[in-house]
Image (cartoon, rainbow, N blue to C red):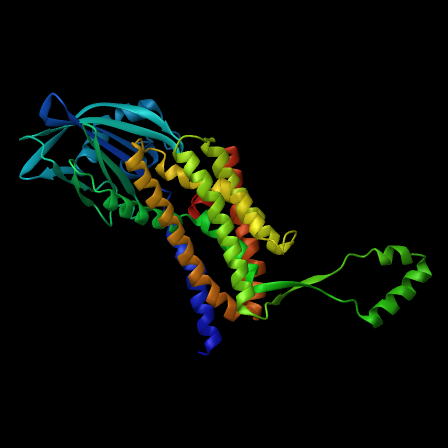
Length: 419
């Protein structure tokens, strides 16, 4: 196999198969809060917000199989939900063992849908120590991308971590919370958030695909002009001929660094704008309905890919990245929407998550750019990836837009690419 064929294979893996890991799941989050009881040193009061879609996937809540989970169906499965969730949580520390006792249940609306709220008490056999170990195994055997945001309140002290199937155990110090550890935990969470967010990835790739190409205007051929002019003159249509639009085509960029500069502009513009709305949304200053945000993200993917087929903006593509980055920032913020933390803990969480998103984004760019530059002159890149790939992205984004904007399910579409 020659060098170009090997590069084709590597390129497909880099920009194709990496986001395919996101195809098998819909983003899965849960929020677990534990509070010590000031009147009883043996008890912590817990609240566990778990998405109904996740519980339906795990234990089957939709008994009528109509895609709509009712309060009656939730009540009928109350004990099953409590047994499923609480059996997957352990709180330990210094020989401590705690029994999980359910105390109530309700439904709450988050930005990404309805959640079951399981209320419970963790009744321990001795006084709760200042250092606790939380073992979190919800969805561990069903969704490798599930994450639980765990927060423990002990008086005015708050400790937290992000846990999931790949990192299910955390040791938390209630007396001196480890802000650096929380920061690192949210860095990892931010990286996985963008790596498993196929709509964010496709938006970025749609903007990067033409970065190693230039849009060149074709000069009319002189012999073709004379023949066309003679024909037009005989029909009295010379003025119409003069008004024909110019023709363009994509050509390989002759040098690496101008292409690299275009990529830096796109990535920097996207980072700047999504960081603004991510921070404003998490801090509660800006809020838009989730349906509007997700529809806007789908529209951004469609516009970015469509611009590769019918280039309206080809010299300043970073403007598209900057404009739509604001709506993507609101999408990123949904991952932290359940946090209610004091300033110090919120700074560690938001800062770590933002850094993680940037690291994940830069990793995609670093995998893409060298391969794209090497392949930029080939038919495979200019036709298969740029043209056909952009058409495929447009089709996917259109499906997302219809499903998200009108809240309808396109038969068979979600089986290919989940909404």
